[in-house]
Image 1: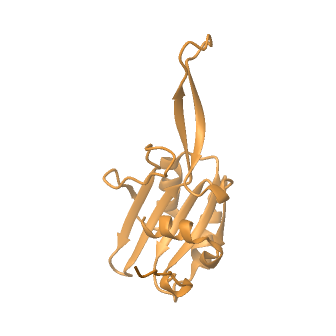
Image 2: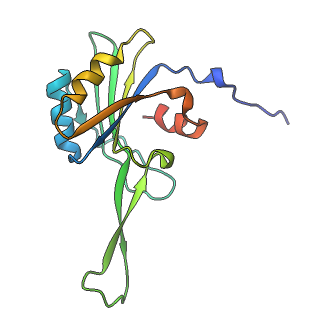
Image 3: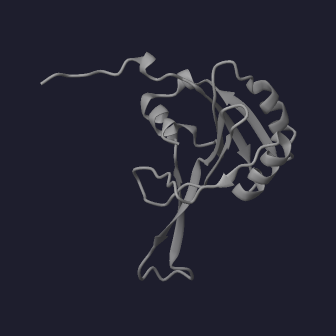
Length: 156
């Protein structure tokens, strides 16, 4: 039986990845992103982004810009999963635990993934995103992501 290995050049990094730290709810962040970037992200309920730990979907927003042939994705990195506790004697019978899309980026609240060619300039996007109150954003070098995380993000 033949063994195949994926080389690093198999991943054509044709997407830019921006990490967003914020206390805003997902719908408020997307509203501000739409206003500041002049885009039209909307929630995609048909596409479910889940991790291997649970089946609770991560909030996912997308928009395709036909003029510039660019796909925009806003993906939450964190979702709270309810754990029901039977006969715990507590006032509330459920606890919430956080589940992360990319575990090694736990401090990141959202990812703004931009499917584009290498000529796309992210600095303008970063400047506009950082104008939003209660938001800190920076670009993540996609070459520093491990293979599993690249596959997760390429599936979005």
